[in-house]
Image 1 (spheres, helix red, strand yellow):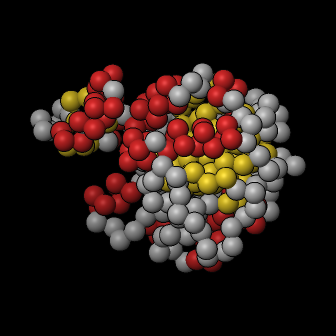
Image 2: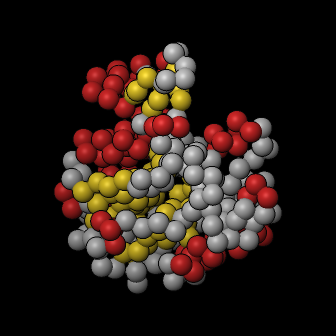
Length: 256
């Protein structure tokens, strides 16, 4: 489990970026796989999610997650969703104490946000599609609709694939450069392949948040692809030809 000091400083708000450690799943899902969309034993996934909530001193039913589809959609939630009926979206916001907003990731960037003065929190799943498509703007605006202010928000970009591990094709870059020419700073040459680039997903997410007006933005120094003992990775599983992969949970809650 990883936490960041910027969020820990806020009284009444708890959070965690969970690693793959500490659960009951086995094999390629070992061990804290919290993804109900995986092919893991559903009962083990439920137990893993309950274990994660125990770390936050919350009951299992407090956890709210989504059917993530790499969209820019944010939902404002006031109560948990019915089991087995998760709506499609990629970010959540609430001002209700006791609801643990959760996002799942295995290379994409989990982003947790809080305005402690307003008592508003948010969580976003930001892969490159969602980040480019506006999911971070969407979650910030949803938090504002609940009374939050950008200048009072803290945002943390959690464990995701690092630039050194994120090879992309040359035609990946133009949409980012069309958005802002300064985005070229998030691409670097790939030493091992002349027709590939290396993309800095966490750096891009952090800059998007800064452009939105957030001044308190932090990043975790992790690489889900390279640090196999700590994290699940979609890209690593694909390269190995594995049939599926586990998902890390990241969650934030306003204490009751």
